[in-house]
Length: 115
Image (cartoon, rainbow, N blue to C red; front, side):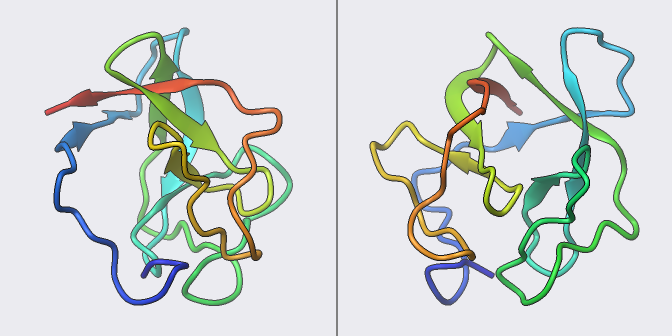
């Protein structure tokens, strides 16, 4: 479910891989898969964020995913408003379920590897 409406579009997207239950000290842990919106959100804060599917993200059934910096495709950011992961490399702030565009304030520049 996309906050801009309908489903996400994957045309032109890479096939990305994530680290699951990794011991890599250079990676940021506590990213979860939301079973409602199918997106990634950061669970390491005191908020479950805002899900485009309504309410908070749901991490039931998710592993502990890690994202790193400095490897793979850079430009992935954490949104402080919804806790989600989004791509900032298109000079577009995307659609945040909290309204308006995503905010990269306080975010690192994460890199995702292609599978």
